Length: 610
Image 1: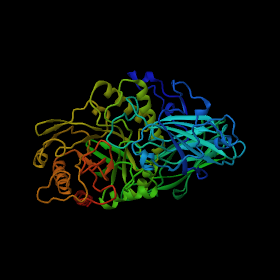
Image 2: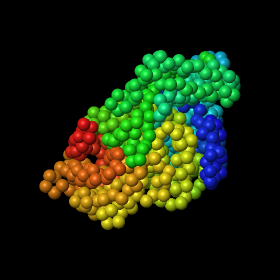
Image 3: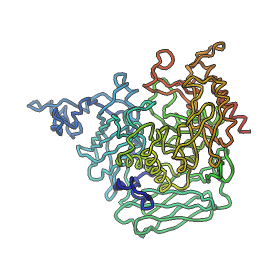
Image 4: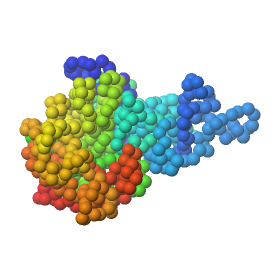
């Protein structure tokens, strides 16, 4: 992975010197058919006192403590003698990977700390080729060992990373050991306190693959407002310069040739063919794209559309669009979610939005979701908001924390910038206003525009209220293309639903506004048509009716993503009758049971879609 951007940039008054390439993560182009999927049973061992890394004095652990060593513990013990071990990952229990450990074993439900995982695999190799391991997400800090050798580290629980293992891999019997530390603190992103279950573990697939010595590391392709298809391709290797490369879109009859510059980059630019069909929720057309350079070839499916703002309108393909959406946490539907989102789980979640709610939009909160969610959204025709977990309060004053946030932003942008569905990058959620916080967010907005100027920038803001008037006066507003706010009048506090209907919004007239969150808890099956108390389905349905009536009076409102599609785990929600560790604001229960408010929102969106 390339060197991090200099921390001094945090305090710079100008961002013009920022180089997007400084944050380019390696090997984020994933469409490699020959990858070996390492999903399946992995053995595990919890490490409450971190003895894999340190001894009783906090010094580096002695060899017998190091669980990542390439050693046959059972064989050594069978030979007798003075050998002594207090671990054996070969004979340890197993759990399925990917998946959070919190759901795998009851004793690990609230485990938060260091865990060791092991997977043995064979890897037939070819001379002259390079070998890599790609982790799609591990939460939170990761140290990777292959055959007793440390090969990589990563921090961040929701973005992919790649480590090169060319010098460490062998033909048979590879011993892959991964140390996963789920602990969060004041300088992690997010910090220690959230309103969702952080889920520890290897939560997304791990893959092993090989490439030529010089390979296609990254590629991007999009449609400009001027009606041209533009893109770039980046080679990685010992001879990246002056290499012939090609791009082919067979269905459009497009074949382009180029050569890389001295840095290994080639650019493409051509007029869009008349036959091109623009991607939209009504017609989510995707095209097969092939990229080739030397002995390397990658494929992707790409849609072409434009997104922009004009005054208070959001323009999709040059026409105003109203975002009919919902927020989603990354949890599969079921009584014991493990953050295991495969294609079937993604289709079930997003199908509720597209077909059940008559929606055209999802807010994927509060972190980058599984890549599968983005690709299914591409296919179904759902516009997407994506955000990084700069959530509530973090350490705004430390440059190293901003550097982590920038790298997370870069990792998700490079992964997802070819997804037509994705239109909004969010740089934070409900962060308290202050000078250091605003500088932090401003730097993130500039990072996004340096890496991907083709999409819109937003953030979910807090609001100010004076009587029945709500104001948006956040100093971050100048940095945003789209204003978004979270509002819970009628749920938190003493407002009645009649008060909610009377609320008035004093908002900027020159930018589109989204209600990024509103919602009320309801325990599925709890009905009381007479009293309609909080936590009943009846109250939640009335809350939606009142909030939608209020929203209809906001002239610049261009979309909704109520909180939330499905009940999700949150250890801070401990009402003993209605919550028990679940946030119950979902329109469906954790097992998929629709609540009354689901139909209220679906009917509202059905009427808007006509």
